[in-house]
Amino acid sequence: MGLTTPLAQRHTVPIALVSQLVHLAKRWQIASEELLAAAGLSAKNLEDPSGRLPLGNMCALLERARDLTGEPGLGYYLGLGTHATLYGYLGFAALSSASLGDALALAVEYAPIFSTALRFDLSVDGRQVSLRLDERADFGSVRDIVLISMTLGLREMGQALTGRRIHGSIALAIPEPDYQARFVRLAPNLRFGQPANRILFDSADVHLPIVMADPIALRLAQQQCERELGRLDFDTGLAARVRGLVVGDEGVRRSMDQVAALLDMTPRTLRRRLADQGVSFAELIDRERCDRALELVRASRLSLRNIAARLEYKTPSSFVRAFHRWTGETPSAYRRATRQRSRSGAG
Image 1 (tube, rainbow, N blue to C red):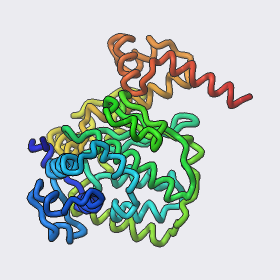
Image 2: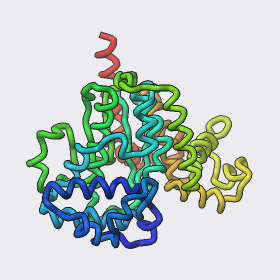
Image 3: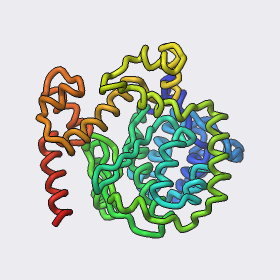
């Protein structure tokens, strides 16, 4: 069953994703008309390169494609067939970047161009980089297709951009599907049932140069990305500005009313503009707490009770639960592993 809720219809995706799906379905001799009918589309709708489709319609197409092809693991086919050009101007910007790290930073900044249904968050923890994908919508029965194709596609793009094999792992917050055994050789380091959707790799890889780096082309692509954001009415810098204002002098956490006042807007306006970006004030507080928690657990000798108090948790146990949700580990286990890595690096 496809998504039909107003929230699902608010999020959109590029029409290029439909073209990719139509092309893939031909491997099973599925006529485009038969597939597109599931979303009330025709081949003419695919001719507009700037066209967009409500997320609910895209999910209906994915479900229809799975039924018509009889292939439950469509996510693997879509992910492994992903090219940078699928992402339009964002893809061209990534192709022109100087390094993999620069390309990832662009992906995070301009992700709303692709869709607000997924939010990207990039973080570096010692020797490991984490690209987290937060789900901003309910993908229904095709959640596995969306997450597998997206994470594998990003991995394939990274390797194509650098011309190097990127070693790492993929963690997905979905149960292992029944068809996984057939595809395990294609992604042996893919783990299911994890706390969050993340692509993890060595931090040294962020310095890998992009094969087709071109600073002039990058500037042109970024200009187009900015125009596209303007056309879609996104304010990509707002969330970052709010995060920067959440903690005031001496570590005192500000309320939403206080942050809104600093931004010269009403709390209602701030709430609406954040929602347009697919994020809430509470989630930004949660991310700020996560970043601060990682820093305190990793680099300080404070007890967990003291850290919980600094982060304004009522009890240490509530802090431990939150930390496990962020990382999949307890604070104590994370601290031990961090110190062990440090000792290994020093040796």
